[in-house]
Length: 78
Image (cartoon, rainbow, N blue to C red; front, side, top):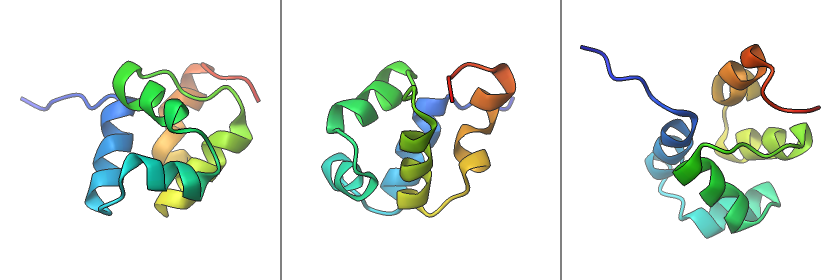
């Protein structure tokens, strides 16, 4: 049986695969540590698309690879 990965789990897995502590990713993405914790623990994505783009860029993945399902649901504002 395949486990469904949440947005928070995906972000945390990508971050850990690169060996990035959460505060280092926050610095690289120019966002707060709290923003990343809200995604990882509560699956609450940043409202601003620019913030989501910076997080994906800091992780070295495409925007769609990280946030694609969010956009498909229409769950965040531009």
